[in-house]
Amino acid sequence: MIDFETTGLSPTDGDRATEIAAVLVRDGQIVDRYQSMMNAGLRIPPFITQLTGITTAMVRQAPPAEQVMAEVADFVGSAPLVAHNAAFDRKFWGAELGRIGRERNQAFVCSMLVARRVLPQAPSYKLGALIQFAGLPAAARAHRALADAEMAAHLTLYLERELIRRFRLASVSHALLGRIQKTPKGQLQGCVTRHGCVQGERIGSRATQ
DNA sequence: TGCCAGGCCCTCTTTAGGGCCTT
Image (cartoon, rainbow, N blue to C red; front, top):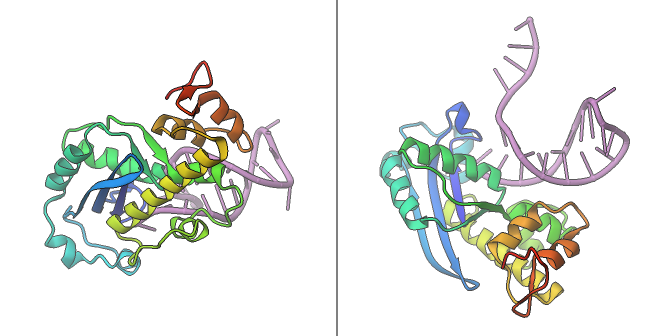
């Protein structure tokens, strides 16, 4: 699971990352973490400071963005990634890697899109609202990279547990989440039946487990 | 001159428009 804090919404408009966190999840548990602020040489807009608490002074004391991105890219390796509203983190992940001459080489799954399929009754798909809806513990400081990455990891594990309980699955893979997020509304059961894995046995000819 | 993220999703739709979600 990864989460960026940035100076704005779009790297194509000159926005840069200010903080990144990556949380490694294995066998249903968080087993490792990476978190760092990064200095890309930009001033932090007041709105961003109000939202995240991250100030220009804080990023000026942080390691260079190039160093941080190299470290986190090594930490992540080729592991498949999950992010909440992954379209946002995917474009910054690609843009910041591109600045250090590296390329994104993993698939992204979006916990927000998966939540839309698995929890159609949720009143909102904001990360904090889903955490509250699922009865999961909220982080003390939202809108910071590590706190948001950990909340998104707990949300994704909750969604996996829901799928396992509802469809009697043996496990839920990143590939199955990737298929679920692209499944038209109301076709969750059909998707799981085609691509899921029940009690360790493939139940569809195109299963990906 | 006017606009300016962008992908997904819903509906008063599909030859479109607007809201959500991320910072």
